[in-house]
Length: 207
Image (cartoon, rainbow, N blue to C red):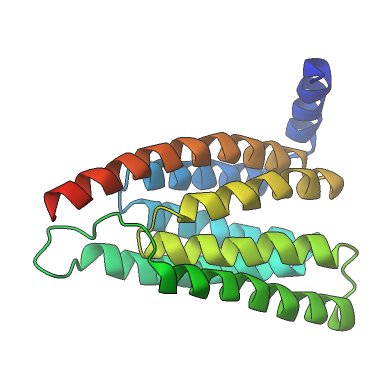
């Protein structure tokens, strides 16, 4: 990998960055950090970042990503509620794996949302990246839904979303956001490892 190219890209991204994008990036990284730590602050920090990205995505004609950020905001409220109200006498909502029904629901959510988003972007907007935008948004739909339920597999969805988002935002000229998603990919891998360990502990605790 050309490290000089990465460095030049980062410098260009900082030069083109607005204070609003910097603010969104800061809170986005904070949200992922708190998610790895299973800290409820993942939701308020994420809400700040996502509401800013609704505006940024609208400006850059990333309509599906604009929608997913609005969805993040709504799901953050839902996740905040779930995480703060544990069930079955547990002190907090435990980290668990999806069962077969959950896996099927996740797959259907991905393909269903992708199909709807692609049709909308292709026929009702001037998006120049409908397939690309729809893919990252559909996988993020799944990731946010699973994170609200504290499912380990949410990190797999985020890894896929982040990897595909890197070239998308780079193509759109949002250099710093592109590198943010590259950083998010690393954090998502770390999050997956941490949540797998937590799920094993929870399984032994309540076995």
